[in-house]
Length: 275
Image (cartoon, rainbow, N blue to C red; front, side, top):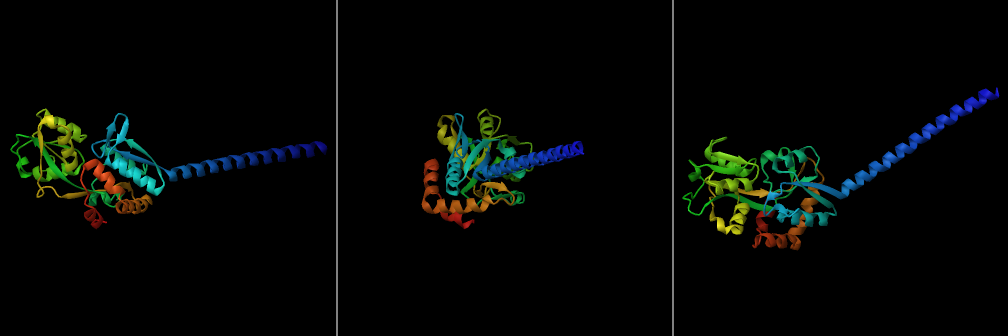
């Protein structure tokens, strides 16, 4: 009888110890999960294509630019810490759609096709595409690109605009991973022109006067565009960053950042009209 009682006691004790261990493990797991969720709420992973001066580019091993200064100011306003990671142009869309990143910066044009898959902040920048050509080029408009080889960055509105002019997948359109490579193709004589965002080509000409390039504007061929920060569909961050952006518009922070990078005042009225 005593042996049976003792055996029963051992079995019950062992069972209780197992339950206790499971409870402790679950508690630790729950605490760990809560900590991870808390961390995720306070720290954002931001992906970009850091080959798009002056919006985002590498200065040594550090990513800098207009977009970087602006997103840091917005993060401070919303109370988030941010980690900015260069992944390249096409991968930013994959990272956001798969929810592996919280948002993307990258001079990303807001359009109806992209809005089907992603959410965008209020517009924060007004842009248009322009033509970059050698100083002695006779090209003066988008129409005059016909019959010439044109270099563009793949997946951009500049690429789309040139396809509208020359035809989709036209043999005279050369597509590259980023605008810097497209410009090098122009300099090496492999293309007669580059079509890209106005700020990109204007900044390049300003900083590389020895390369004897000029910028051609054609508002009839290239429409106005607006940039936005890109979020996964349904992200709660959109509303927070929209509110913060309006705060920066009103308190002068946006103007200060804009003038630092572009040397002129932004058209705030036009940006606000797009909200």
